[in-house]
Length: 166
Image (cartoon, rainbow, N blue to C red; front, top):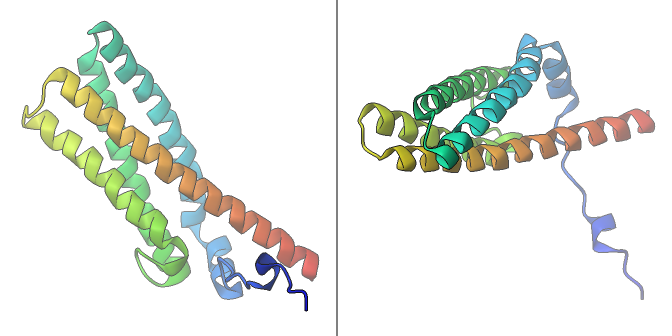
């Protein structure tokens, strides 16, 4: 007796319930996240260029440090506003099941950025060490950003399936 392919028999839990989708769409924090995310990415790109330049040339570390501090501030802003958004949509500030792993990874990204700030103000690392720590924080940020982009894509595909079904 032939079996249906496993993917076809496995039911997938939707990212948002209808009520959560309504709250998401009505929340001003959805717009705030939509503005802050690309802004943070732009800050990241500029800062990454400055960090790489400082590593390659040995010049510009102070400007690179300032750019990493700005990136850390942007990260804090998006994390706080994201927690408010998550509370409005899912009823909890962080670690809602739909975004659990993205939030967990965000904690790691924040920890690396915080380590950079502590190391900078505490003069705990060499200039090169600071720049390499910034690169580690940025690599973690890129992975986390990819998680969120994949989740956003999943939500859009889900919305398309729901629209086609109605």
